[in-house]
Image (cartoon, rainbow, N blue to C red; front, side, top):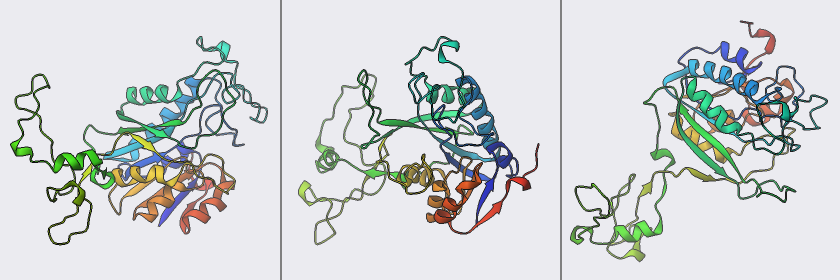
Length: 330
């Protein structure tokens, strides 16, 4: 049974047992972008530092509930100072963070650097910062700017609780390139190899694929076919690259910050075993819990806005509900 806790992130995390969660996949509210109409919300702090400090406190609790080999995946985007999508957003229902000219030399139109401020702060707080993955969007939101390029990416940071952690690279491996197939079809044993790499004690030759077998005939055009006679399918995959091209998807529900299920599926498959537990402390419409359940994991979501419950029910189905008033104060 999945579990949804309706509370702010810190209170919700307080009722979760330590060392019980396999992986956490989440996207916190972006800085200065939107007012969700809740007094305890994160994202409208008066300074970026305050915003980062609040997230560090939340993710410190996430680290407590993760198993020793657990991972954290954070989807996060940047904000511009004084751009209309940063501190001076007029859609914030009257909530106006302080002017950007009053904070540590950040000027109007400056890119604040929120993703890396968060990444470095989490690293300083004890997390292992393992990777910055680029979410490349083929269909980004149009922008009216004329003095810079249109933004078409966000970050997915991979962090771990310990230096050694669970990561199923084979579960998210991708097909090898056509050039690799052609290379592997050659008689590598008869090749001298390349000595261009300084300090290497033997020549470089094409190496076998990391995942899967490499059964093939000597003719490249016979690759990727079903076995028939002397023709074989190449069952070879390579380690997933760190630029993920994933299109955004429209969502009919009343939530404006949903990420696509295809973006977080690799995080779930790599970060947890079947039957494991996946956590999202900023649950929103329930995408993480939904995808986790579809792939045989247990999901725990924490959401501060009870108005999103109909969206969660539509996506997740049955779940154990813990209401805000049932969560004890610290």
